[in-house]
Amino acid sequence: MTDRKDELAVNLARVEERIARACAAAGRAREEVTLIVVTKTYPADDVRILADLGVRHVAENKDQDAAPKAATCSDLSLSWHFVGQLQTNKVRSVVGYADFVQSVDRSRLVGALSKEAVRAGREVGCLIQVALDAGESGRGDRGGVAPAGIEELAALVAGAPGLRLAGLMTVAPLTGEYAGRQRAAFERLMDLSTDLRRAHPGATMVSAGMSADLEEAVAAGATHVRVGTAVLGVRPGLG
Image 1 (cartoon, rainbow, N blue to C red):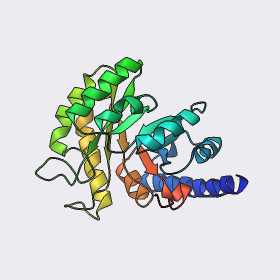
Image 2 (image 1 turned 90 degrees about the vertical axis):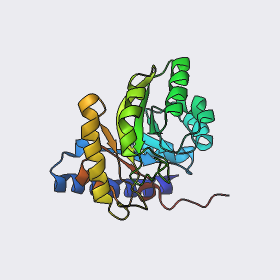
Image 3 (image 1 turned 180 degrees about the vertical axis):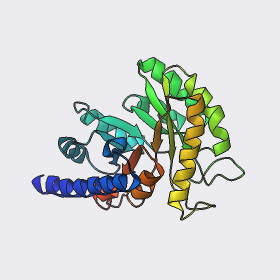
């Protein structure tokens, strides 16, 4: 355990330094950027170590892994973010522990989240996942709604009991006009955030950037970065 804590402490310090340098280069205060550590495929023991090291935000992308982990760590002062594509049949479970769902991308999901949030007596922060690679279907390869669909979906979330419209999220696309252009993709997301906040001033979260491109996200103005590998190491193979 001590060796693992030392490893995570070193990795976390390196990521913190990267964020601090990126903020300084962008003329931003370090406090403007929140680090979310993506703990998917890693055990609850790692979450406990991270919490002891000062991490306050963790993210998961599969309910079957996240639910038992969140239950085991329920005594910790953590904010849990669900960042994966979410099926409606998993919503009841996810609402039980997630403080934020960052992957809201369709009206049916909004309805399901609202129903379960009300049933559980909870308020869930919702980020609309934006697909900058959306094709004619209006959806991206890894989920998300096309920019043209943000306004309608935002209005649904804002008016839904038990939900709070928190902002926007994106994953740097692998195809389309923004492929390989992370900075441009994140700047586009910031423009969309500016548009969103005209109608919904409280939707201030902009979640973008991961281990490989967090600097580009900070430079563009992201308020939250989602980092897994750079903190926890290369994920073990599953199966």
